Length: 68
Image 1 (tube, rainbow, N blue to C red):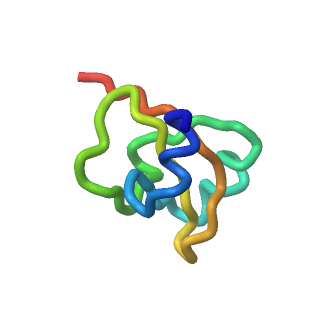
Image 2 (image 1 turned 90 degrees about the vertical axis):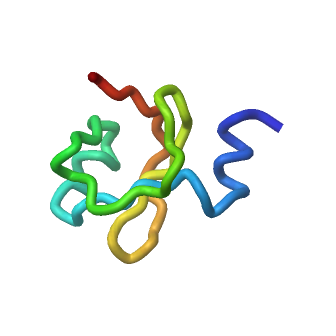
Image 3 (image 1 turned 135 degrees about the vertical axis):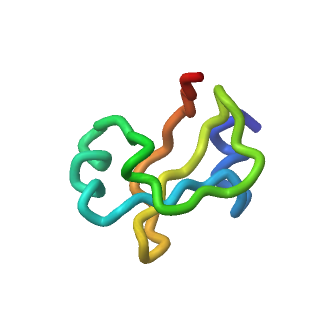
């Protein structure tokens, strides 16, 4: 199972974004820190996570890149 498939099969590794950002992210835009409402603990740089809207609908899968 690939890293992406394993992230889909687990409820962990999710980021919930503000509804106003959903159309932008759904079209492939970046998720910026100000758009994040909540996230699961333990997400690390390089992880693939599922981006969800506030109603727990999946929007997009992304790889996390954190800056210091």
